[in-house]
Image: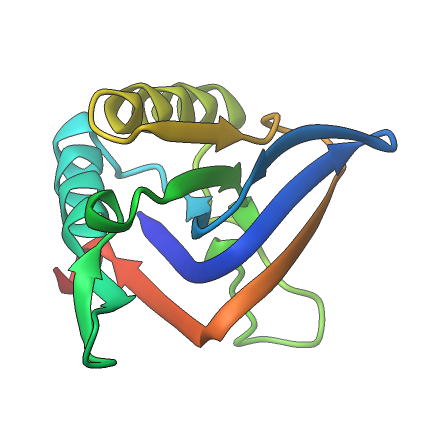
Length: 148
């Protein structure tokens, strides 16, 4: 499982020109699921993400968590995080989770986040989405379950 976490001043996702989800200060999270991922892995990833202290405190140090700044989450499913570009110029997505399983994991991650975060917005699995953001910093973290 892979999460690309971007600290944002604001972010939104549009589907067919309409805003589907939007947050102010918080994390825009791109979520990639592989066939080998489990709910236990998702739990570990969500816990790590929600515990990240990457917002600045009064001294300008990255010392505050999402919860401590009242931040929101915008969760977007993105199978292309498992693109394999080793051979040729056309990426292979063979390592990405099958759609049914990946959607189930995406919904599970959203539900787990809603248990802890005050604001949880989302995209729509499999939709053509237009994501806009103002990256704050910029500050981007990549969490990969293979390295946690």
